[in-house]
Image (cartoon, rainbow, N blue to C red; front, side, top):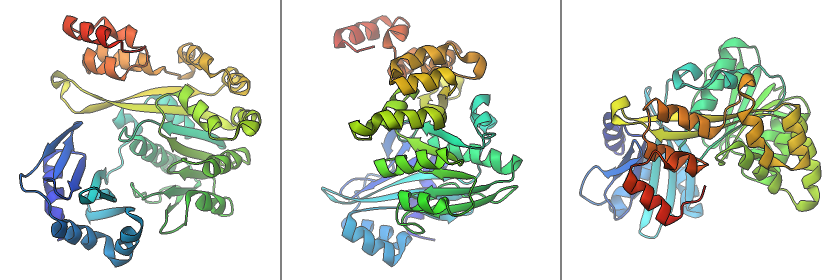
Length: 367
């Protein structure tokens, strides 16, 4: 048993999601969005160095000491796996650990709409799962990959940093590659996937021009590409993909994207009320690309996407504010939580208690 496992045991028992360790600070956990200390005693340099180096091994530790950052996954036991990020900060060493469920939940268990499952039936194109850090993107993608694995015979290549959910082969062959352990970078892994007889490629993070460009090319050439971005809704996702390119290439990229994008699933996690059991619930915006959406992307008129999504319910589309509205109306989340996460604040402002409305009005919170 590693020294750090005692902290992980506390995290698991508390039903928390993240462990935060920082030199000169007491250890803390994040539970249902709130950060709380789990002991008063601060972490020393010696304690941090010992427990961090113990679980990453000498090679990774050397790499971390040189670079100041390190990402990898650590398996405490068959039931507990963690995504680990080591960092150097003003007071010394720091580390953040995210608990990765070893059991992959189904899309139904996660409450993800049917339209998302339909993306698993595609044979080519680009599907993006987006949302802020910690919104459950990886969990949703793992469930979608598991659905494909159970129902179709495909070769799925995943390129991740680090590997979070470990898939076992069902009907599919699943090849999981970790950056930088198995491939130097996302672009390198993506290039290699084109030569590996793959049907589906999952790109853990589309964070730079080269990765996005290669993903678009792969989708155009007949692969089904799943990727993630840190954007909150469909409009911002399309804008972000295009804006990453130099202005003289953007018209061409809009044409490529209009032909290859199949869908966007944006996800937010909202705090549930105590009356509905506490914890958090995922809400989704879903864009299914049709001829109207393709034309909007080609024209660069992304401000029109909202109307298409709102009017596209019959095709499985869902606007983020409508999804938030639904869970608020059912009493699953509070008006305050709905207001904080909504795009159009005015729609939710009237449901706030009078004192909170006054605060919001005086603060001039934008729509």
